[in-house]
Image: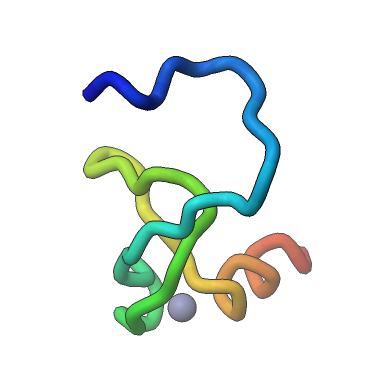
Length: 51
Ligand SMILES: [Zn+2]
């Protein structure tokens, strides 16, 4: 660790590889996936948000 000092940073967001908890598809998320939180791909995420 070290270069991630926090605060605001400009530029493109770093994408992290993750596996969707719903369809098990490999996807990329703009945040660091946490083990205690399920990660959803774009499709499943919008599906969940839809209702
Ligand atoms: Zn999915």
